[in-house]
Image (cartoon, rainbow, N blue to C red; front, side):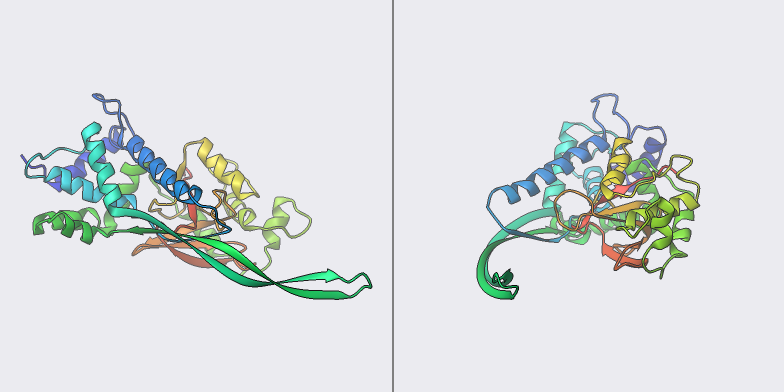
Length: 332
């Protein structure tokens, strides 16, 4: 008997509340959806690193983004629940369902790479020994590695699997914006009731130089102040005293604090307001910028960031943008 998606949604919610689905262990297999998602994320990271390791390069350029987990799991839920030959519930996880989910993930996501040699002119300055600066032009050939991450949309997957109109309606129901908080609850085990830190952050938009934030932190002169800004906003809300958000001036330290408490989502996640967003501009696996998620609309993450061009600004990024390292998830 086919289990309709409405029942699936109820199962997800109930499972989340009781710690069974996504965040808890299945009593029969000892396998949870959250564990499987983490394993697939690790597999993705391994394949991405393999692209970097298989060639020697001087410059790395990455582009594109992954499918967000909400989309992957929605396709998985519909396909698994409404399979004409073998319909299955999705409130538990086993090896066969893990394989189905893994296959869907890799059908939706692809990693490709290419290399190209470029000869560029570089200018170097030297002292001629008599106090004169001499400029010299030299030609340097560098190997560029281009890595592209691409993904299929939910509509493309529906066409690939030959979903009928009823199945497409189930997908649409699952992916309604009004269900975003439900997805966050069942996938990440979190719930929110406060947007106080966003309100504080928005009140600071336009500040230039960051002096109120780095001086509050204890620095006597200007430093790179994006983390100081986030910490200042958290302190204004009382979140540092209550241990909800750490006081940190280095982005790497902020990432580690959330990871140590298992309050971390990777960059492919679809965030919700009040999360702390960490960026990796250099694609070296370490964060060098941080901000606060203001809102998420139509696949776009809107942020409030300090030290963005030395000012407080509202910025926006596509969900899954390769420059997003991940999200700290405060337990408000």
